[in-house]
Image: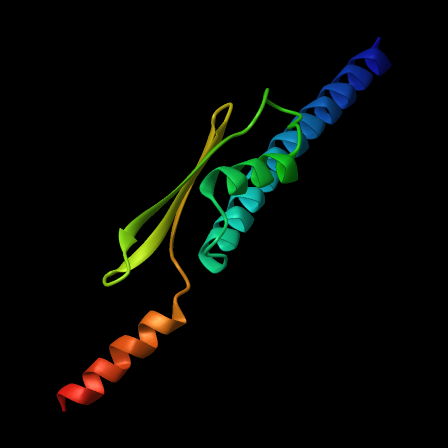
Length: 119
């Protein structure tokens, strides 16, 4: 009887550890996929938002802990003040959001040149 109780506790602890590992894995994969999609949009001016979302969904694959990932990417702003990529991801109880400036070295050089002309 004592061995049965010990075995039940050990199996329960193993099950809890596996479930936690699946949850952490799904959160990490989702965050990495949306982060990579944001980087793609930041550096590739010709890639549409829908293609980046599709790429992130393929990259993340099927999660173990919940049904599927839901990703959303949006470009906002203008060339003068700077564009931003806003991203969010969700799945089950997990939610993640991210906002990054678009990589635009040409605009920075133009602004720096403008400052030099003012002096």
